[in-house]
Length: 359
Image (cartoon, rainbow, N blue to C red; front, side, top):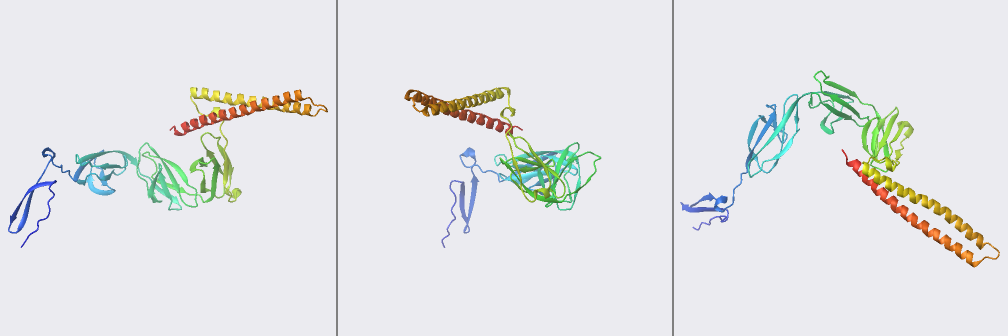
């Protein structure tokens, strides 16, 4: 009976095949880089997790490992992202979590966390079921809920939102004697749209930022006056006090006006450049006003000469040349004014971009 042997990869392995009792036994020897072969990298590695203070529970991919810090955890997959976090009762970790990857080359990596003792707050709202955001991080649960510990001496910004109700924002300062129970009564609300020209302006209602225009279905107080403030870099602040009843379903529309060019935030050298651009614009504007007056006078003189009972060709031709010269000069100055304004507008945009990029 003929026995077919399975193929053996000749480039990866070197070995001996021995037939014993009809069975094929293959003895392989791994080649390492020193022999000119292919290095076999480990598929498992280890992660060392430490914290200050120690004894914090270790979570990997949001699952409790049952281990506490400091700990070296073996048999973890290499070259795969692992989300690592730690928890210690009444403490807040920094960072909240990290994503690590164990390199196959070394087979090991580490993560360290700093834990601060904090104050735990219980948050309730009336009505219940409100969405809670703490320092711009939206929590997965709704009220009533327990907030993560806020480190002692620090302050957290908490925003509570519920459909058909006004959002509320409060500052929680963690002190040893701060009340642990926090209750919020949410106010019924109506909805309006808020627009601005130009768009992209920040909207603040009664001191609470609500986003950027255009905004639709924005919650506002149902039965009392409220203040809408709309702000955009390079434009004057727009403010209005109104009620939902007065709006009668109409949108709030803010027509924003530019801040004067020279009032934009600038350095000394930038302000000097801005003034030079402004002087150029103003000079061309003055020249244009004078030329328009000269043109009107030249045209009237030409009309008077042409209206004579016995018009003279020479004076009429001279008057016509004067009209043409003044008109041509006026057109040149108008074109120069357009270029000067274009340069001024480009400089203004640069200043606005710089302000927007500043922290």
